[in-house]
Length: 93
Figure: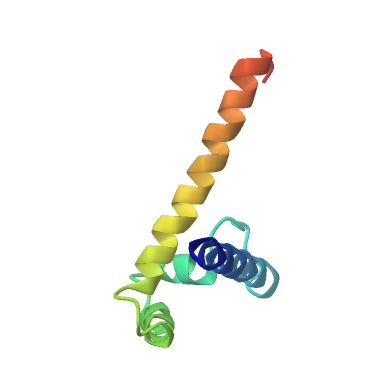
């Protein structure tokens, strides 16, 4: 059951990143819609309302946008670490 839940989270995150890249013309496809809402929440009233709206959709989670932002960063760091290990092992950059 835990593996299925992790799969749902991964697919949901991927779809969110895709939607953000396609519909928001984002240059940073590593962030999900929720993560980007958290990142930009202090820039304007509209962005803050968007951030609150998304958190409201995920009412069962204390601060969904913050969680998504942290998760986006964690996944990005995982890829950086993975690729750095490949460069070190292969001796190439």
